[in-house]
Picture 1 (tube, rainbow, N blue to C red):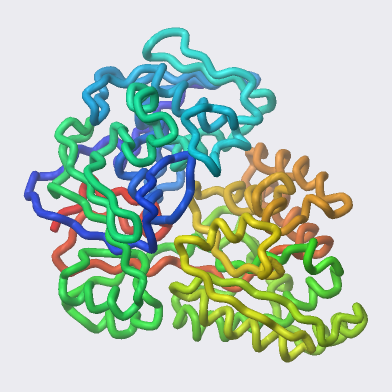
Picture 2: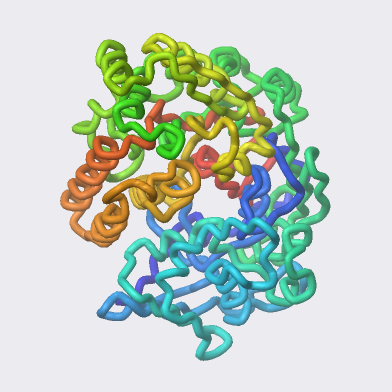
Length: 512
């Protein structure tokens, strides 16, 4: 069938050209903005502003709508996707969008040996690429993608940051350094970037939906919570989704700012490395020890919810409170399991980033684990280097890792499918679940679940997978479901706050 949904966020024009600068406070920047290379949320927010993809999800609705592709068709066997590109779309370097740009951009995501990839490229679309039999361009405005097996999440995944389209001319020119010179078709063009400081983007006159209202967008690294608050109140920072939860009451009372209520789409999690904690009883004991009520109140200041649906947050389809028992505290049972495993007095190492809610959650968990007979050593890590340490299975503190899973594509496959897959970074590099007996079969179950079209059957399938994932392996302990705290100055208008709460940066309609 021909799919031509016209989402308002993807089609409405830009702004009134009022001008000015909008400054967003971000977690960190390495000054490398590449859809194939994750370093920080701030860097990927820049990618979101510079580049657009074939499809678009606004987060005001969870359905993929056309973006650089104006239409697409899907074959009856669900294997062939044929995209028709919009004509006349301009890149920031003046070149015109063609199918060659799409092939180059997606091809580097699919091919680990692509010469334009920087060292350590994370290639977020690599798993999707493994299922692509061919990617071809019959002509300048047509792209044909043939899959090996059906995957009904393809359109959603192409809206993700990894699916953003880069100028092929720029890729040919800069190669693996494209992250320092990113060229897309988005509302803002790259201007300058300084690692550890800021990224400056300029409004693009040729943006297909109209020039944005603001002249420039500055993404500024601000990691001190008190500085974030004072900068918001003074107007030095226009907006952020990194406002500290500890200040939520103060900010709600101050007329200089607006605090937005956004859907709970994020998971606060703790990964358990089964290679470091090999006994299932000990991993289950760790999960049973955690006081989620304390984490919700003391780390999130009540902005969130206890994880009653295990890994699927309340704002997503597939949320099922029948899984609430997987995230309950039972200190007595946890003590018994530790003793049965002969682990009493063992030292467990815990790693957490040094920003936002992570330090307080780490403090609570360390005490919870001490209470069940374990000794705990903790370390606090700068956010800019935390991800690289998560990927290092040899890291001294890789036993337990506090992290979060934000929604980049609002679908259960982006949560459960990403984290329960034994071939994902969660199932392999982080947790070592792929080394455990029988774990490989979870991939087959996940494949079946994501392709179900009946909503009730799909929810039931993900519920069954999550229960097995928790009861047989327990490599992910849920801490809370939350929404990143979005705050702006009172004069800021037009931001897509639902997207920003998920670290997606859609500022083409924002004004100050």
